[in-house]
Image (cartoon, rainbow, N blue to C red):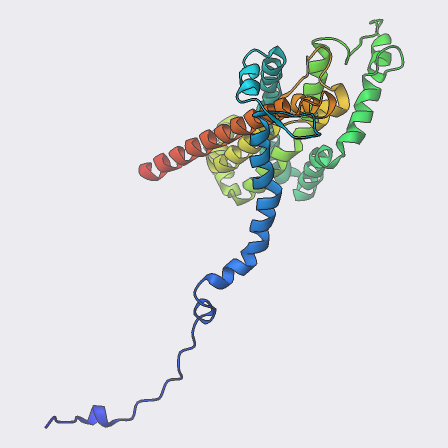
Length: 323
């Protein structure tokens, strides 16, 4: 017969029954799918189905009516000998310069100056005002911007730029009607429109930087450029990758400014893949070939995104290994 100790005879408090968790009450994680279902349906209807249909059209010849005619790889083979196609992708390099390289570089410098110099000497309100001023072109409708740009660079003596040049005795220039001025004007507009985005992102990233780091570096004799390279760039590098990636994607598929300002002219000087695909779709009614251009552009965007993500992940792994 077992001996019952005094401790075992003490009545233990009766705990309330443990309530099942929400996933258990709803049959595991199945309940969560109900809330995700609308998003999946929208993704399927808006993205996946049109993408698959677009890929199907690349193997057809279709004018938008009747039944698409299957032609195999004819559209894909045509791309390799299409001079306009290669011109549009060559111009995409200039769009990357105008929407990625220049705005990101200037945005880094301006954001660092607003945070390190203006913010400390004049207060945060001045920096916030300047940040909002730089970001204003981002929220300006491209149609309105196109009207203003068209007025500024109108050919003849009626254009604002030509009127300004006439003061110095310089003859009028057909800015948007000849090469290379049309491409330069378009690039300048893209820089102006895109500049506010990196400034706002970098300014937000700099909020997590301790100002004492700048003060300590300044006391040690570091000039502004040394502080910028050693402190600013090292801390906000993830945001630099994000801005560079998103701006590169925007540059590759830029359409609105080209459509409003130059429409790909003159003689294809400002033709880009997105506008070329649009013109094949809706102007020439070569829907199959337009779908092929759009598909190639999509593949290029995916490849660029994968490269950026892999490079960023590799650098992060090296940093963790170094720590």
